[in-house]
Image 1 (tube, rainbow, N blue to C red):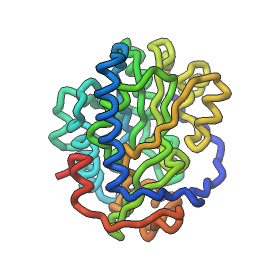
Image 2 (tube, one colour; image 1 turned 135 degrees about the vertical axis):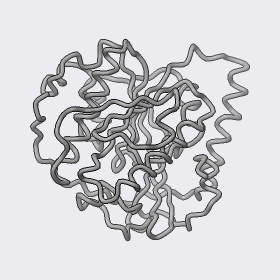
Image 3 (cartoon, rainbow, N blue to C red; image 1 turned 90 degrees about the vertical axis):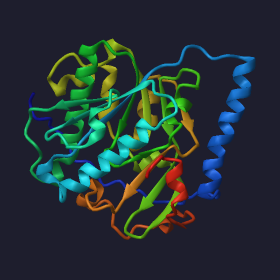
Image 4 (spheres, rainbow, N blue to C red; image 1 turned 135 degrees about the horizontal axis):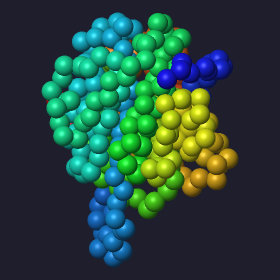
Length: 301
């Protein structure tokens, strides 16, 4: 596979008055209210057969990590949040250079793909490396005959324990976009919720792909010939790309994903996009102390 040539992107200013008036506890309660409503609705109008989901993780290389033990621990936590989901009709596919030594990789829902292209040399190559690994997962799914939902995910995110159940309960759309999410700063021990989550966090979109939509060639430059190309594009503009492609999509205003910052090996901090002192003030949001009760909703020990 040839190295992908990428245009230099202008720095996206992930800021603005995008805070949320609800507390995080109230946000978590809103999710539970949805399922109570859904249970009553299903009794009246049962939904069609749900669609399965693949979570695609492009794992950073040991070569460019500050602390491989932190990378392994973060991936373990991400997988624990996924594997604790109430609906187990999903797969997690991880593409990487070095395979972590963590127990969760032995789970039947988790698959590892070893990539054979060179690891990045510096932070400027991180994005290209991530997209090449995402493309490798697309190729793998093409060969496997998979059709269904596809969600890119980072190896340090936290996923709500009912996300899979939620997505599989919704009427079909070509895509779903998370317009609300949570942010946690480990350094400051704080947390907040924010709107326009998809502007800043790439783990905020779910796409439907029929098998023929996945890439068939190892040449990344030809990926624009198939619908899968959208997962390689600039995520703050995803709604624009979907509209250009005449795709139906639904915005989700419940915080099912937590973007975790300042844990010691963040890509966004390596690239200078974020500071370990980042706070809710930057987003006009209400900052709260990080408390253990939040972990119950993400099944983190």
